Image (cartoon, rainbow, N blue to C red; front, side, top):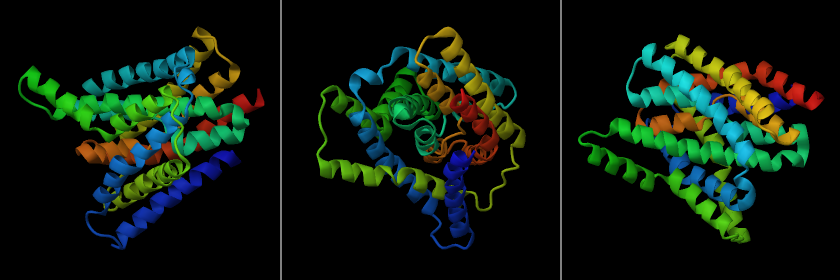
Length: 311
């Protein structure tokens, strides 16, 4: 519990700092968009390049581990999308954001330090694998759906827009570059690593600060039923399904099972808000889900961590 609170409290602190800055009008009207632009086009690509370039290529594709992770995500995504289609009716972009918010965990900002605190160096590789798989692949998938949602015309035009969206996506490009560097076993020079570290480390704080700015004048009560439903999926359904696949269906080392389940139990990550703001889709709901799921995760994640640390 202490470790989780130590990781969680700064998240609220940064969001509060952003909220206060917006409440007292310390920054300009376009500050949220500017900060999100920095995160989306600069900080996150730096983080993706370094994370993937430094991960051992042959170990990135850990079949059973990735099957457990993606199996849990796909199952909960399908459940969320099915219900949202009939209950929370909206455009494809909003429905996809709703469903991705139920599976996109805060693996980088919360997951890695939490696992390192709980299990030490043994958790480093699985934590990095999940963070890369969560950020690069899921964001590429979401980009495709959002590009389809805002495209119009013939099937050929939609395919063209989707292709261009992927090619121009800094998240997809940076992940591909990092994966290529890992495959070629390219050792990044020290100054380059420092450069990427400095930019990448700014991604989480800036995204959280921007979300605090955005929350000024917004009501998290709007769409409360939907926000609570997505939070329940994220904090309960996602880790349960991941646990079942990792423990009952597949065979893998206990540390990998623990890392997969704990990562799945984490609240919704702030990148959902960054992408939503970028495309102008589901922004208020994304911010509310991140806030509510993070608050609610303190007891639920503590229970999961204690189960594996004590076993």
